[in-house]
Every structure is written in structure tokens, then in C-alpha cells.
Length: 107
Image (cartoon, rainbow, N blue to C red):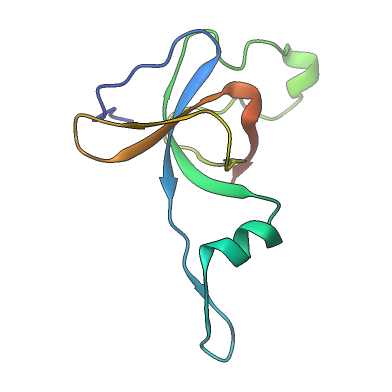
């Protein structure tokens, strides 16, 4: 995946571009982000844009099992309040978070 942000994480950090997910109920009522955050234990979705060379190296093959390590382009779930917000040179908003703050890779 291309990294248009101009931001390259170091140490055990990853760069994520958050995805805004707007949902409506079956009746068409809009659910605000605040409600969804409480409902989902403050988890957000995003696209992994860049991964530092040391990220996700804390676990070996035995711990990862058949799963592959997250890589740029993967859709991931991460803690909403983790890391630091940064604006890329492309004007988009990104988050720099620790690799351990990525809680899941979404299929």
C-alpha cells in the first residue's frame, strides 16, 4: 500500500487512517459516534497505512499460529484513545499507535 501521509512510524509504532463508520438503526435513526463508542468499548476501525520495521515482532510463529502479521492495507480495529493524532502532508487525519494497541485485523 502507498503511504501518501509522509509520516513513517518508528520503534513499535504503526500508522492508521481512521475510518468514520456511520450507522443507522433499522428504523432509520442515525446513531452518533458517542453512542457507538460507548457501545463498542471505545474501539475504532481504520486502515493500516505504514508499519515500522519492529512492529509486531514481539511474538514468534508459535504465538501467531496460522494468522499473518498485520500489514499495510489491512483493515484493523484499535483503541480510540490510543496513540497520537497527526495530520499527513496529504491533509488527511492519521493516528500513530503502538502495535499492541491494534486489537484485531478485520476480514
